[in-house]
Image 1 (cartoon, one colour):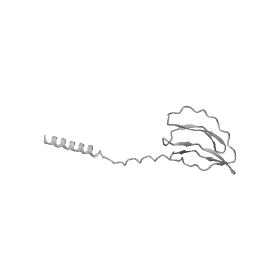
Image 2 (image 1 turned 120 degrees about the vertical axis):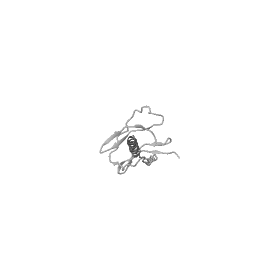
Image 3 (image 1 turned 180 degrees about the horizontal axis):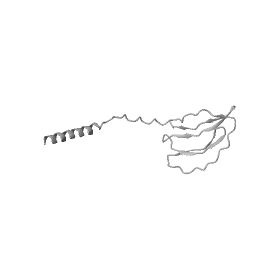
Image 4 (image 1 turned 30 degrees about the vertical axis):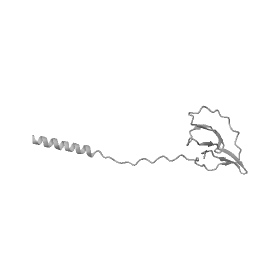
Length: 122
């Protein structure tokens, strides 16, 4: 009987040791907070061409997905030739942000693209 008890206690101790030994708590650091929204879109390298952009296309603007969305109008982009970039709805990075559209500016060397960006009221 004593042997049976000793084996039972040894088995219980072994099982408990394996159970508790397998439970390790690892403290992981909290993930870093997301970066704040950018006030200005990242700047692309300046694009200058010596060919006048085609006339703007007329776009059909569908209803916005939500009252918060802002329409970003389409424009002509350049990648060795003129390519139409269609307009689309976006959610502003800040509730009061206003979109300033990009445009092509004429100068003596040709035409340069001025990218659109978000403006924040003061």
